[in-house]
Structures are given as structure tokens and as C-alpha cells.
Amino acid sequence: MARTELTPGANSLLGELRGLIDAARQHVAQTVNATLTLLYWHVGQRIRREVLQDQRAEYGEEILPTLSAKLVPDYGKGFSARNLARMVQFAEVFPEEQLCPSGKPA
Image (cartoon, rainbow, N blue to C red):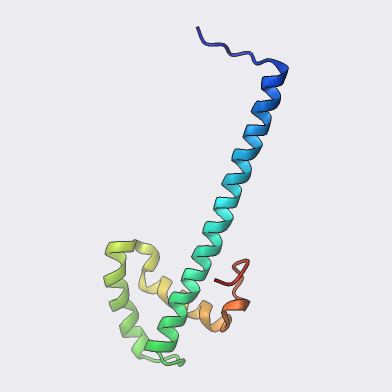
């Protein structure tokens, strides 16, 4: 038969362990969000700079679906043509990495 009641000392330990676990989970979520934000900025910046040559070109209407078709099978629908266009737009709004709202630059 398993014990379900904890002593006061064990209750305190349990509370501290839960706090550690919750803090670690929150830190992981924040780190993941910051890393993904920078990834999306870098993807948008590369496409903007190297493919579109810092201009909104009709060529982008062709290249984004092509890039997406190559990325989606390996990385998922987060890299659809529409999302790639949003990444480019994100890089246009925040042209410098330090201004990217990720918490800190890479």
C-alpha cells in the first residue's frame, strides 16, 4: 500500500520541488520562444537579403512556394510559403537583429 500522506517536512520539500520544476519549465519555454523568434528572423533576413535583394520582388511570389515545398517535408507546415512571407516581413519590420523582440540577440 502506497503512502498518500506526507509529513510537514516532506510537504515543504514537495513544494520546493514543484517550484523548481515550474521555474525550469518556464525557462525552457522562454528560451524556446526566443530561439524560434531569432530563427524566424534569420530565415526572413536571408530570404530578404539574398533572394529578394532587399526589395519586394515578384520573384518572391515564385521562390517562396519553391522554398516552402523543400522545407515543409522536413520541418513541417510552419515553413509554408505564407509563413516564409511573414518571416520576410518580420525581417523588414526589424531590420537589425538587436531590435528583434526575442529577449536578446543571438
